[in-house]
Amino acid sequence: MSQFSLSRFTRVIQNDALRIAKPVVFGTLALLGLTVLIYLTNFTAGHVTDPPVHEVLFGIFLVGAGLIVTSMAFQDMHHPLERYQYLMLPCSNVERILSRYLLTGPLFILYAVVAFSGMDWLGNLLTDAWKGAREPLFSPFSVSAVVLLRVYLGVHIVMLTGAICFRSYALIKTALSVILLLVGLAATSYVATRIFYWDAFTWNRFGPDDDSLNMLVAPIFTATWANVAVVTGFALWILYVAYRCLSTHEVQDEL
Image 1: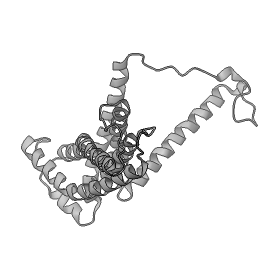
Image 2: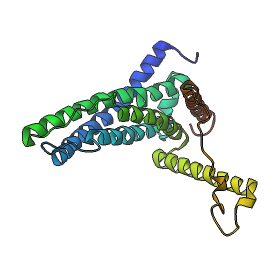
Image 3: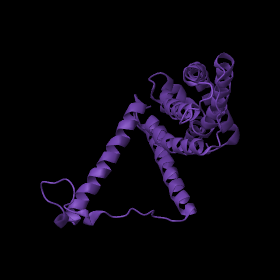
């Protein structure tokens, strides 16, 4: 079987979309009610919230709901009964991971933008009708919204890898793994600094004795394209790791 077939991939992504459609729709309705409630209790006539409520809510909804959906992307692969149906599905691992990456990543972002725009419009409409208060509508092209979308695309890849590697509680385990990794990197950097600059420290003090180690942290690359290339390469590497982990599951006793 070839690694990728467009017709086969179309059936796979349709099947995956139907599997997550019901919980996503129910979650959207719940967030719609919560958004209207927050707008009704926070909007005041002649006053604009700072920071805008819609920016805060969009960030919470996008990252929170998106990571929850992503953490369950490969739940059928780990389920004791559904995993046999998952394994017997006539598709390749490339099609599997690409389908679930698109559904929980770029396509989820598109859905979140459209859905929250509707929530924001309805919340403003009801608040204006009841209290005579409204705020500027949500814009997905604002600076803060674009930053949130970029952040989500980054953390989404890590969560997708965690959803493959962990059989249960993928969201919690992935978050703890990332925290432990960051703490380990910080501790390693500190120990290396004390080793290489041993004469700048006193044994009973955490920091250096003077300001001689206050070094300016300059960007590694000054050109924007270089930073984009590095970030893109790192993201592709994580996706490759996720693909290799997915392939490994099929040759172990996991399935």
